Image 1 (tube, one colour):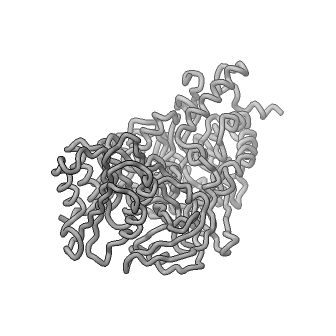
Image 2 (cartoon, helix red, strand yellow; image 1 turned 135 degrees about the vertical axis):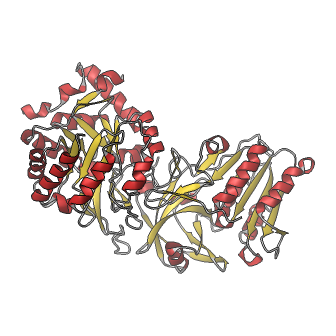
Length: 302
Length: 282
């Protein structure tokens, strides 16, 4: 079954297009191994910073409706040195998400990580809930250009830049990343959102504002991928609210070459991979497509 | 899974029971908690302070549930000061539960401190079963013993149960640790017969010792583990132990799972995700 679900992106072959999005289950080698065994095509680690971060106090995640979440975890991660130890014997397809607050952080992170057995990097320029990391950099096109240049100067490994809905135009940010040498774009990150408890009047998240993921943002993600595809040459990984095989196909048709999933793992459990892959397989067979690449960007014709 | 359980619900504390100088039980009404299985937990939001995973306790009030906490860290100390009428947020129940087979004849429930909560809920579900039950609980000193009354009440019409209590200072019951009582029972095979299952919840180092003894004697075990959690629903991996997630795969693990968990009783992950060793104090 995996044969015709395999995809090629930036010179990497993945057994299927389902990549675990950054922030989900992304800090333990044992869990990485389990996710790949359960059917994930690849995994993006939690965003790794130079120094360990505890993140915000709980509540860091609040479920919304029955199919979405708002989170403000605060980029909790074990820091570079510990994470290098964690993945020192890695044998599974992993991208490392990196986050920093100045240019030196990024060159340091990339130079240490590039010698490990990893597929490549994802640059988190769109975390919506931590000051001076993520979105605040992503909103500054000059900073985006410089950081991508620094990373690409330091490594030959593929670099995806994860963009989101911030103050700057997502297409402009992605184009700047492309000009600076990014190999691909991941779109979209969570979108700034909040939840107030009407019984007490308190914002539920400790950080008050977090990032919305899940079904609520899917139409926005699809729109972004569609518009990005029209404006970019480099491949796109679609992300945002993918809960079913139908959602995967919609993102591929919009122009994504692969997708990232996350919220569905909380909503449907870790067996989601198998269900989505089965759906994709059946869809290809019924619609008489040879492989998933035939679907990429179909909607661009219209 | 009921997706409704994920939406945070605000409940009012209807009653506060002071169990010991450092332990309180908070009673509230919630339809999902009432039908929770023994060992399941809630993510409890203490508004403006924290959100914590807390095991669900039974209430003597019909249709009510409860949580029992010890005043320890930042959040539990904040909750400790909550009074009747105050509000907390809950989501869940989450996690798996203790399981009892119909053919079991004798079981041991062994716990310490608030680790007794899921074991009391388990007892409550066993009320009608024809089963010899040995309950072992321990505390540091007499004034920190709690749940004796509720255990006796649950089992008042049950002929074959024994409640054995240890205190570290010997101020009540057997002087020593719950594990000392368990060792004694396991040696008196003629008196107690075969043990079909050991159920345990409490400090992890205690549970590791209980597991080691159970493995040596080839007695099956179910242990409820605790880890730092953010999400409670299997997506953040803060609570991972080897390749399992305490919130999603547990919190209860059996001996077959425990034997593959090299981190059990040895280490846990801190809030950043780094593995830290448990400090062994003996």
